[in-house]
Image (tube, rainbow, N blue to C red):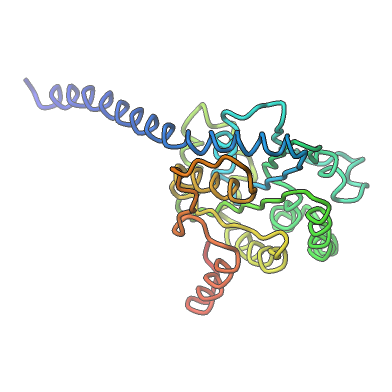
Length: 283
């Protein structure tokens, strides 16, 4: 048998094996998430019983894993008591409104959880980088958002702010996968294509956002998302730890992995140290 034919046969044998290993890994990951997903149902029941409102913000660079995490968080939830909100570009009418107005219109009622796939922090990240807002609008947002969130929390809303952090190299790899996979191409927008070019600008506004808007009443939590599975598990832990609900399973580890979950204050210190060391920020 010639070498070319042997390689072809080996290739056919290898591909199914690779797919089988991949499917097995995904099943193991899915099973490992289920205990935490069951706890999320208890949290949801607690919110309903106590008529509490909960908002979770999912922020971060494009392809950082926000959408995938939201899907896993809500996988088994009661759809009557949660909503995922991903707002598009504002209309002309909305452009003339108070900036927060279209987000407030989506806020939860008692017993409901709302998960924002990007939020009012568009004005702190995407808009200034791409020139979608003026410098004055950006400054007004950065001055006003702290008080806005303080009032929100003071009036009883549980607010969780997650920032998903990905390296430049990993973001490029994920963009390439989207480009090559016909089932994922819809995820690749013109803004995504430019994200790598504007990497340093995004890092600068990320630093300014964390420095200004991570407060005692509404802190940011950084989720390192190079490993998507670990990012999803640990995001669930952060969410569960934000609410004191009854009936927690004592067998479950609720402690976030310190290699994956980083408080904003620690991230700021790490970023400042990197700037001193190399003269510039890195993710």
